[in-house]
Length: 151
Image 1 (cartoon, rainbow, N blue to C red):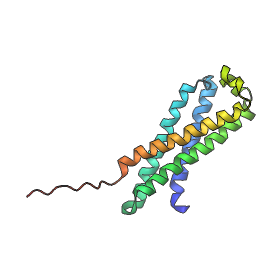
Image 2: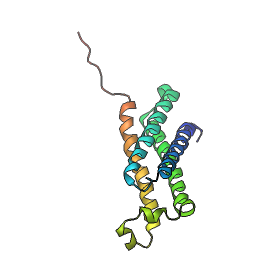
Image 3: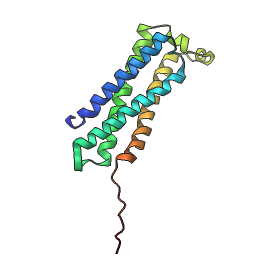
Image 4: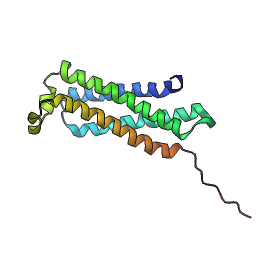
């Protein structure tokens, strides 16, 4: 666990940024517009990129694709988990009418709409984490291509 303290810290920082962004949207009264949640991927992506970059610097020559991949997953996973817990707290305790504002006509057909929303928030976060980690690791992996020698 000590090896992954850096990605955990980046995940906590990312979740703080995600929460702050959501609260700013809430103050502006636009937090029910799901279009703004696209910026969450930018915040999470930046944290994952920086976590992998600093993890590579810390590990030096012992850095491997697997270690970097795990660092990215931990960063995004921690950020997603903390933000999803905050989102559930916000939607149920801090602003109980939030889910009604968020819902559309199809939401009334489901008895457990709250659970569906929380599951969607978590799935979006984890899938964003996986895709961005795979993408960023292409930048950080070492190349196995051999340079041809000129005669």
